[in-house]
Length: 300
Image (tube, rainbow, N blue to C red; front, side):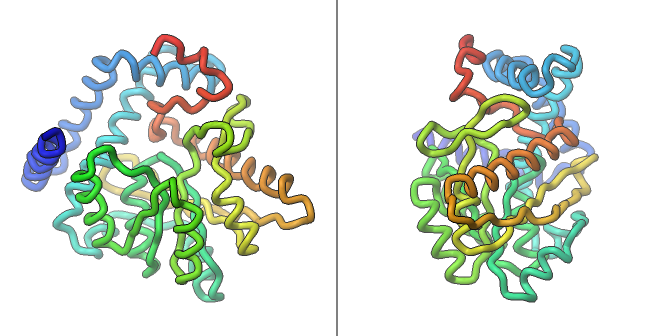
C-alpha cells in the first residue's frame, strides 16, 4: 500500500513540474526546502552538527541555516530533475550543462582505458551520471543503494536506463563493477557516505576520523587505471557545470594495504576540496562521522 502512496506522490509532482514554468518551480523548491529544514528537527540537528565538525565552528548560526536550507534545495532539485527528465530527449538533458575537462575522458576513451568515475552526493548527482553517459556516449554503471520502495526503485531504474545508466547495488558492488569494466562499460562510484567498520577503512575527512569505501581504490589498483573525479554544480538550478578533475593516480606496490589507504585518502581529499568550494550543494543530512563520533549525534 505504501508503495502506491509513494507512486501517487511521484506522479502528482511529476505532472505539476511538466506544466510549471522554471521560475515557479524554483519558488516551489525554495519554499519546500525552507519548510523541510525548519520543520525537520532531527535532520536540522544532524546538519548543524556536521557543519560544526567540518568547519570547526567558523560559521555563524545564520550561515549554517543558509547551508542547511540549500542542502534541501539541492536534494529537491535532484528529485524533481528525475521527474522532469521523463519526457526529455538525450539532447535536452545536456542542453544546459557545460563540461570542463572533457579532454580527460576523451583521452581515456581514445586509448581504450577503463573508466572509473568518483563523485559524491553534491549537486544534482543523478543528472551528472546521465549527462556523462550522453555527452561521451558511454554505458555507465553506477553503484548505489536500493530504494526501500521496490516500486519507486523500478521507476528510478527505468529513468536511468533511458540514458544508458545502469545500477548495481552495494551488496554486489564489486562483482557488478568487475563485470561492467570487463564489458567495456564505465563505472561511477559515490564515495562520500559513512560505512561500518569492516566495509570501509579509516581516513581523515575535514580533520576528523571517518570511514570511506575502498571500492574505487581496489578497482583502480587491480586495473592499473587512474580514477577520474567529476562533480556537478549550479548557480541557478537551470544551468549546470560538470567539472572533470585531473585523475587520481593508481598505486600498485608490494604493500597493498598502504596503496589502498593512499588512494582512498586522496579521494577523501578531493571530496573535501569540492565541498569546501560548494558547501551549499552537499548532502549534509547524512551522519558522516557517526562511526568514530556517535556522541555527536546522540540527540537524534
